[in-house]
Length: 288
Ligand code: SIN
Image (cartoon, rainbow, N blue to C red; front, side):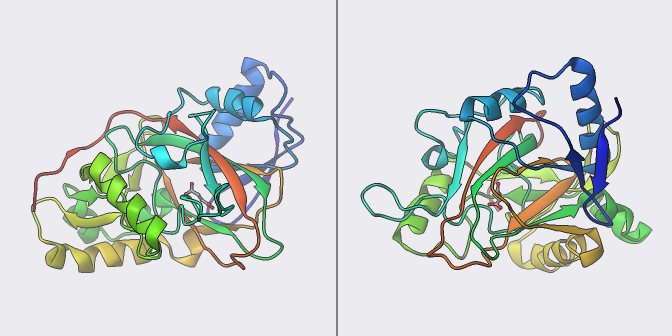
């Protein structure tokens, strides 16, 4: 039976209607879901009342899962395949390590040598208003560049650095950022990546990129800023308003995303993410 798909925005994303991901679906059924994932970049599945084990099991259909060794503070203590994205304070009352997760335009794990294929973010609790996530179509962003700009960036590598969020400047944020930098040396990634499955070119940039390899920060910044601004133009973007039991699946090889933080921080926002390992990409960057 053909999947029922509802477009989410002009540029990317579909809602997959009437699918229960807690069920053990056939190869054929999952194959249709995976084709929709490759075609639309983002899938939304509503009303998925999954246990943690079921979330992990469904995610494994997409590929091998990351144990989040690069983000040890944020993983679930019993389930290393789950990355916590929560502002719920810790049992001792101190702030959550992951309360600012994702507050920059980025593609998951771009700062590692095995950047993610895709992520599956499940919503447990959303604030009554806001806490939205933006997603951008990086194929469309690449395609819309002029031939001159495509030529200019064709061989550039951006240096991706973890632990660079400006907002996380409280004690927890500062400690976490220092640990992130220590564990994860800067990694150079191609600015134009060829998607290993579709063969299409996508822009691979974001706010974790602080310079291009072989260039200074000062020289790089205007072009990084331009490419980020260009890639997040309204016509390339989908804005997701979370509901409990939503699962959003995105392809990290042709999209980037940003958690807006547009909500009352005294309200609970709790999501959990699995991260599917991608193919090796990039190299450890030389010092500037
Ligand atoms: C993430 O970057 O994986 C989290 C996004 C979000 O919290 O909306």
